[in-house]
Length: 510
Ligand SMILES: Cc1cc2nc3c(=O)[nH]c(=O)nc-3n(C[C@H](O)[C@H](O)[C@H](O)COP(=O)(O)OP(=O)(O)OC[C@H]3O[C@@H](n4cnc5c(N)ncnc54)[C@H](O)[C@@H]3O)c2cc1C
Image 1: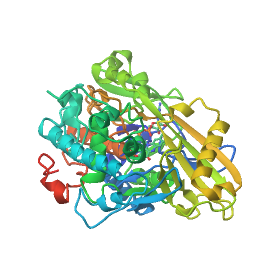
Image 2 (image 1 turned 60 degrees about the horizontal axis):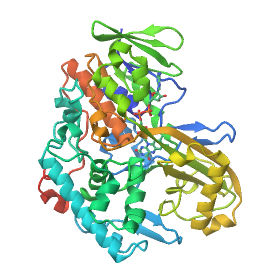
Image 3 (image 1 turned 135 degrees about the vertical axis):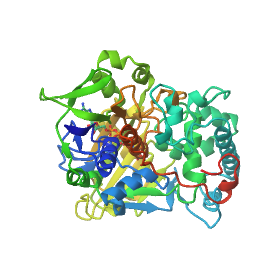
Image 4 (image 1 turned 120 degrees about the vertical axis):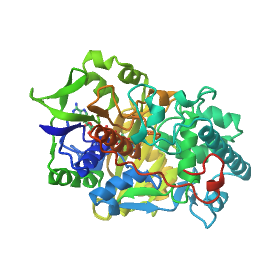
């Protein structure tokens, strides 16, 4: 009998499968689609014939487990890390956030003071907010942050598990662990209460937080927003660096198949799981779309949370560990891919201020032939997070609106001919980081002892990202290995606090 069945070939399932295979277990991975990568993948677009990523995916320097996963697969060299982050504003002015010799949290300060996108009053409000954020995180750490117990020391079979399952990190506080803390507030409310200027929010916080957390400021739990800002921008010198794959996303996962097979396992495509059977308090088998069923000693689910709940027997799905997932909501992301007959910008990528489109990625300059740019033309990937407004908007209207933005930002677009455009709407891109959502994220150990759970929505201390997905896969693998008496940690520790951040009370020792 197979030792472990992994269900789902997104990043969580792949990370879990690779870690278990590395630990010497024989793994069978069942994926519903003919491709790997789930929500972070590439595919051939049916009408254009272009191979595209569903959406540009960005990682940050603080995504240590994702980088570890790429390193295991031998593809880490395909991620280019950038120290400079260009911002382009409503008047097409470009400012760059970049490093300096100052110690964290001051390392980005000189470039920040040079930003042309806002005035001195706005900059001062950002400095005040940054100090407030460091204080906020330090206080949460001192007064019951879920942080310091690694997943391997968790005893997580109940809804209270998230707090203990979260790895050491600058993590949002779980509601369970807030203790005497006040109820969660939104990021917008926190900025209001802390005197942020309107322009500082528009031109600085929004480009970073909306794309990192995929929701509007009115909807983001302030603990998530603040934890993310501190972890990425303040704690460590390299945490903010922007990692962009130099190859299509699908190419990053291709080695998984050999990797798992060389260790005695298999990856099975087009094998959707249609049910999970439970007997005597354990998972006994899974049924597949062709009517067959398969058994293993243990199971790792890396399914989206709604799919998992549908596949379980009703008696299990009503267990609070699973049923609390009904409270999680989702948030969309839209990608627009556009091809022009000529180059339209020298920028490799840029965050956009004050427009519908939030990021521009110059794929033809970065991918060196991996994506076509049609004979010296240009191929841009545009991204809009929290794109609720576009979910019901016709594709041609979205293309027209994106072009209007591009023409105003990049003057060369006005002379260029648009050759083709593709819109990819991902309605369920991530779970929404709404106030209180943290208490709805279960730990990796389910109430069924041979069934561990992964997915970017599982309690990892991170918002829904590729890093969270990989962390969840590693956590779930640790849980299954622990049932076999293997206690080797798989999760990598976070980047350490550096510079002055080492001396901030409460953050010390991260
Ligand atoms: C448009 C978009 C842009 C994003 N941008 C970023 C970004 O820039 N940076 C970042 O860090 N994150 C980003 N994310 C989030 C990131 O993609 C996800 O957090 C991550 O990929 C989730 O991985 P996962 O394995 O948890 O889930 P998924 O990727 O959803 O994996 C689930 C897998 O299960 C499979 N499956 C489903 N049902 C069945 C079944 N019945 N049987 C078998 N298999 C099944 C699916 O096909 C899929 O392969 C973005 C997401 C989207 C959608």
